[in-house]
Amino acid sequence: MKTIRIGKSGITTPTIGMGTWAIGGGTWWGENDDSVSIKAIDCALEQGITWIDTAPVYGFGHSEEVVGKALKGKRGKVILSTKCALQWENEAGSFHFSRDGHAVYRDLSATGIRRDLENSLRRLQTDYIDVLYTHWQSVEPCPTPIQETMGELEKMKKEGKIRAIGASNVNASQIEEYLKYGQLDVIQEKYSMVDRKLEKILLPLCENHDISVQAYSPLEQGLLTGKIGMDYVVKPGEVRDNRKWWVPENRKLVLEMLAGWGDLCQKYESTLGNLAIAWTIARSENINVLCGARKMEQVSENVKAGNIVLEKSDMQRMTDDANRIIGISK
Ligand SMILES: NC(=O)c1ccc[n+]([C@@H]2O[C@H](COP(=O)([O-])OP(=O)(O)OC[C@H]3O[C@@H](n4cnc5c(N)ncnc54)[C@H](OP(=O)(O)O)[C@@H]3O)[C@@H](O)[C@H]2O)c1
Image 1 (cartoon, rainbow, N blue to C red):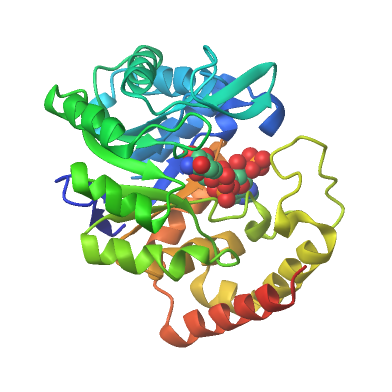
Image 2: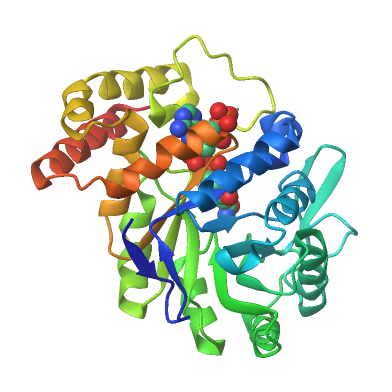
């Protein structure tokens, strides 16, 4: 698999990463057998997917705990990212959402993110994080200046507790602000064939500043694998509830688009999911595609996309097809 640099951090990574939100379980994703999740992480590392991403809020600590168990004795082989700023320990910061009996606040204060880091290090059974992201950015009514957040992140870096600083769910002016106070190496943003908001401003901005992009939900939470039909019933409160492309009218458009790519699957000896991942990798020199997975079979399938090089005309055809359904979607 091709590798890319993560910003100016000196860390390199293969172009596909593994996301472990689903491994956290809870009402977003439903419960998991942790031993299956651990095997999936093992399988990723064995097959060269060495960037493992998690966050405290995924399963309210559970995803980090499972990742910590999976990485025992293998820490040196892994690029481990987690996040800070979404906390449910107290009422500090601005209220973000409630889930599974927890009220979650965005707290980007120096004290808040330091507490989050220490909790993550304990759950992950490690003494350093490769990339620490601010998960969601500060908002009213209890905002924290980026100067304060970045000051603390830079301090963590000097202490050797983190190797690189990332920000997630950011806009252009927030990126510019981060850059005033330190070195921002990577952003983590939603990006898929059918969700292309990133392309207009953030992708070129990051290319100009040597900031890498880690694309999350590249499979639209499984829809772009083509394995989910119209008969799938989205449960209230699950992760796919209220997602644009899971609404039946829009889902039908995606499934029709994918149904037209049988010849591409044959040509590249790939699955539909592989095509979607390969397309996303090819959109920028600077991108890591963060595929969520919780089973070995999913990982083993997804990794194959890392070796697919789509011809220019096929890229264009897929882009045109995606643009067409974006244009007529509800
Ligand atoms: N920064 C943020 O705010 C943010 C937000 C969202 C996600 N993320 C990160 O990005 C990662 C990826 O995003 P995501 O999990 O939302 O979406 P995704 O990668 O588009 O989809 C992941 C889901 O798709 C299904 N899937 C994956 N590979 C498959 C395969 N080969 N065959 C069939 N189904 C397959 C699985 O669902 P089932 O297991 O249910 O079958 C999997 O959990 C997350 O795990 C998380 O680390 C970050």
